[in-house]
Image (cartoon, rainbow, N blue to C red; front, side, top):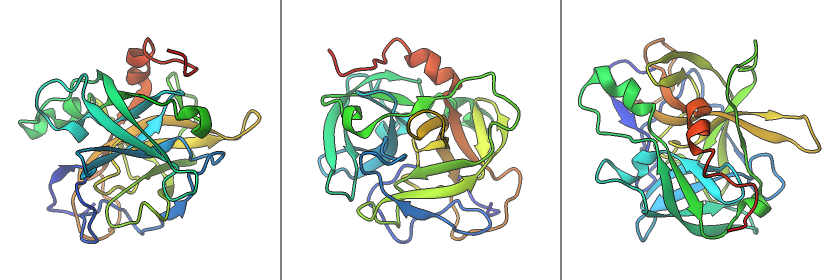
Length: 260
């Protein structure tokens, strides 16, 4: 990454064309649709504030629940019971939205030293229970847990709603990226990230079954703030929260249907 930068949480307030980037080599990001039936339709925007001025990316993990980064709510008191908004199929005629309630969190705390950042970021997640089960129409992703097979992490993608790019045009997809290692509670990666990508899934699309399925391995959490793409350099990797442990913690909350 860009040397001399500082680690930032990839949350964004108001989108700006001057938003700092964390992109390696070249910027090959592209817009894709999240209309119902698309492989990317489980991904949407999670926002707080009356004007949605603070936002992250979220992914439906069953018909009623969205996984995203806890730092969208900052580092104050427990976020359990807080209300957030999820917007799906953004930029399409099928756009839908729902308010939701935070029902589970990873326990993110304020980072006080560089030495503890990797453990703290490993707890940077929350589960949002929607008032309307939008996964019925949009579909939902599968959370992948170990043990993992040899070569399973090939053909990975990442996606989100970063600053500097129009969310009305579509979801921003990095069509090819990889995990570069692990440290503490996070998985390091070279997936393109900007503020707003937090909570966005790192995933692969499986062709098995009757239709493509999104299989999520981690959600993006933090990265370095720089101005333009540079060659990848180990030690400047972006940081993602793996869903391997999250899946077990939220299993009691998940449901396969919209029944109350």
